Image (cartoon, rainbow, N blue to C red; front, side, top):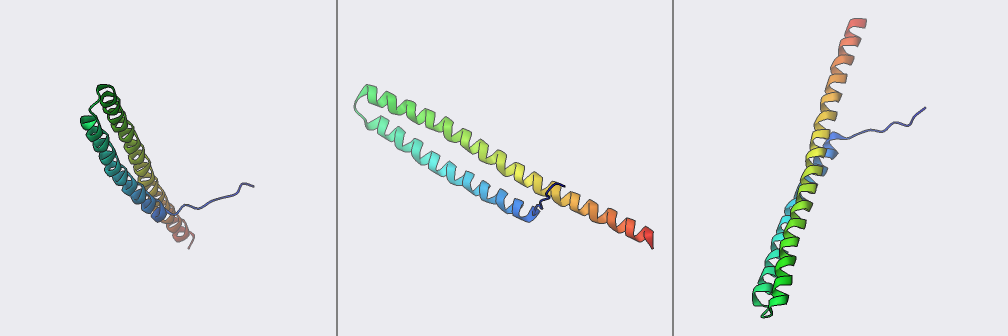
Length: 104
């Protein structure tokens, strides 16, 4: 016999919000990091170093954008899962009520 598990839709919703908050923090950190690299590039005074810092800033922007998309995907997935579990629980409760009412 298999082992069951339970899902708490409220916890999934809370987790979705927490992941969304992490996404927001990631965006702030990304902006700060890219701004810092761009500032260093503009004040480097050495063309090769400035170019490397500019490239790092561009790559950082792309990387943080990808991480933000991943956070958003996870957050949305958790939210949709929470709603699916809630809908399923309501449907089961409704069906159970109908079955027991018919047995009377």
